[in-house]
Length: 105
Image 1 (cartoon, rainbow, N blue to C red):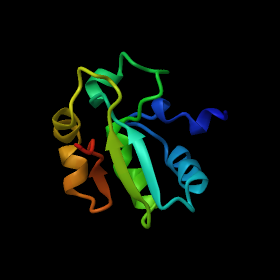
Image 2: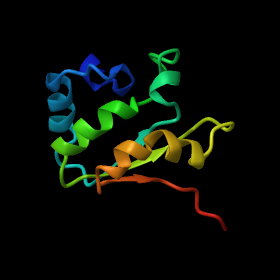
Image 3: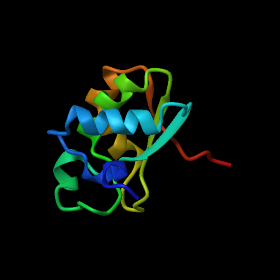
Image 4: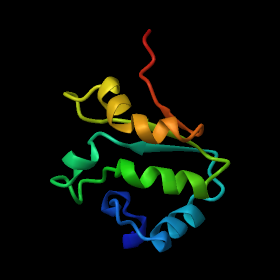
């Protein structure tokens, strides 16, 4: 896998070039699910684990204007409310970013 496709390497100082490469890769995607288990603060100790950096979401969403982005978490001790909390600012500024929720039977 090319390094510019490693979503977990993105951080606040993400270059436009990296976002552009991701946008090109996902350009025909209608729905993108993104693991946002950790806040920007927490992710600093999780580099290389495959998690997406919340602060880079807004830029990516601007490039992928027709793509719906759904945020989720994989870690059992994390909750949808946690993802909701640390992504609130980004989601409030973008109508294409949502929280993916577990469907209760």
